[in-house]
Length: 296
Image (cartoon, rainbow, N blue to C red; front, side, top):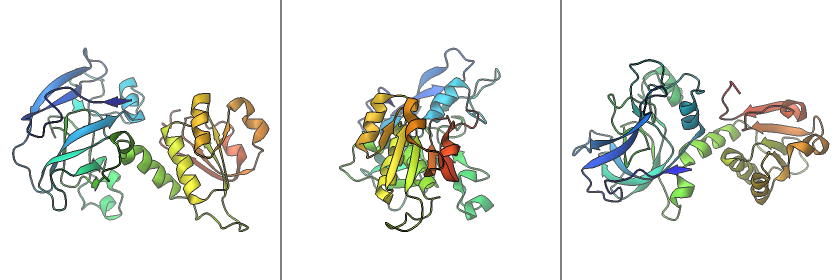
């Protein structure tokens, strides 16, 4: 699914105001309001103002709304003093103002999901998401930082927000989930040892549990790495058909135990929240739960 907030004319870089969908908290009524925010006429060094082309809905956003997100958010409905924030972090857009070297007006870009300080111990270890003063996209109070969520016509990237240029032929539909879903799966696969050449020992058979977007990304990346066989299990036969298009041996759970023997898979990627049978089929205990709420 996607969100494309309404006027003022989001396609016009000359707009004077941004329009944002602001989340007030689960216990509020209404839980959302639409607010107008004046766009900054000048930017601080490192800031970049982006006109949002497309914002996709991540599972994190869904868990925020359902109240199942561990740790909560600044605007989670728990008291009468909830603070509002603009949700959303996945997306892509066009730069309309820039005060950062190497980023120009007109560039099509995507962005990182947090703005670290760059100086604390976690940052020095390249653990930017663990920064002691991190500002997270889609989790920041509007009273603290304006326009720092993608469910808005405009996004104001902070000085340490990573920004990546997109090729012109990459459509918004393909580009929007790159900074979260695809980046997460790329990181997960980086934990695997190199794929062996034919005839050499090493991981070459995988099982992907879940054929949603994360699962499809995983299939594509495993194929690119040269895995010999990749099983994919999902309840949805429509999703399984898509998984087969990416080279997977598509299995419905009703047939999973018959077709995948115990101790026959080198690595399991669990991306659906159900780890049943996954550990048993893993030959060497290589089991990765990716972007799954630990409460599931």
